[in-house]
Length: 430
Image (cartoon, rainbow, N blue to C red; front, side):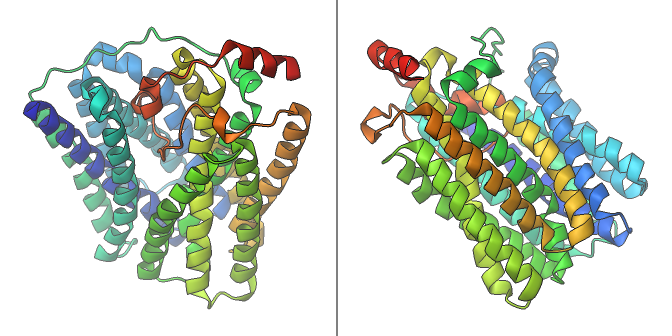
């Protein structure tokens, strides 16, 4: 037992170092891109390239692990990422950065797959919920803490690139130190098409797509939004860190709310409330830029609502499908989220190019308004009223990394088989 716990802590430490370096790099690239005169449109496309690489990684990373093994695959990706981080500083060119950013996204999410499949293989059922919660917390804390590293030096120097490269490279040491046997990766799991997922839970599909459309630009373009408001690098670091931490705190009560009423309506209310917050942020960015404390509070509340959309969508799908298809169905939702993350930053970058600082929350407002209308139509067509007693699962805060984290979801070990009479009743109603 002790060796297992030590191994899990090593994996946690590796992912913390990885996210610390990658979180720093993501913000640093936007700041350096602005300093180099790169357009807002290009910086949006740059973020899309990152998520395109991530999408490719979700398709082939498991096969890489089967061929190379966990440690060698992790080592390969670490070396790849270490080279990428330094290459950004060496090749200050838009075309070079696009290619490097694609490779970076691929490498980061391949490393996610290694760590999460290893965690899943070593986690006993009794500790599954605890490990899942700790992993989610580590992700959020690492990304929030990484922003404070911006205070080390200016984005125009090479120092921060070196620091990011050191952190990413250091992530290999804890995972290489463990002597525990590497787990077997099972690729023969039940499959589920996107069309079947949509048929079972159309609101979950809409929620994940919208979550990607919102969070892709948030992770990639928030530094640009804050810089356009005139924030210093210290203020920018505080803004992003407080938005993430505040959002994490607000996410839990929103999720618990979804356990007490129809989850589809909770998602709709989340869309509406988030759109109102986006409107307030856009107005503040346009007319009250000096109210930085207010903008930060609005951003934290917005993050809390939007962070919750993806896990509520996943748990809504869990309520509607058989346990055997949990991982396969949730993987489809992850791919849909990835599609939104790829498209969103490119669209938001174009809007930023023409509208200035207020464009990012304005983009959020447009997406949420359209999505609310779509969701209302889905609810009207469904004609199904879901009561809290119908829920066979509970909300769990989660991160959107690789499909392997879905096997760690606490609900994956519980009996989620839907009673046949209720399943037939739903299908007949639709």
